[in-house]
Image (cartoon, rainbow, N blue to C red; front, side):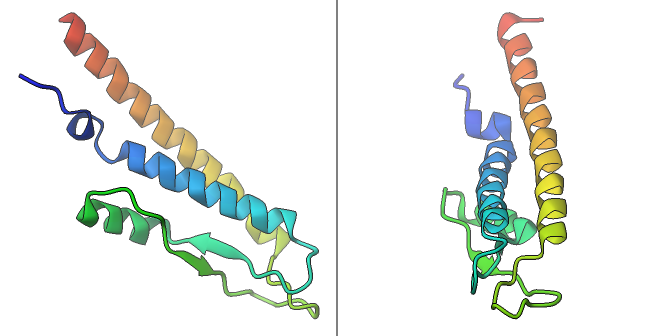
Length: 115
């Protein structure tokens, strides 16, 4: 009987990859908070997870521009407090996904060892 890691690990690897992509986008937003005409970008995590579940393959997430609450006069749409909050929430969600994945590996290890 073969072991399918895709089935055993579930959606957690895809969630981690998507969270990583989102962290990179938000970090770029934060790095460009003072760049004129920079447009803040983000990923709709829930929509992308649904899309990845239906497609069953790794694909690049659809990046969307974030609508500003109040755009700056220089055209920059990055709101520092919003980006910091989004980054913190994404980091917590990443850690949670990592804990779920770690629990899956612990369970697989115990199953392999017959415990």
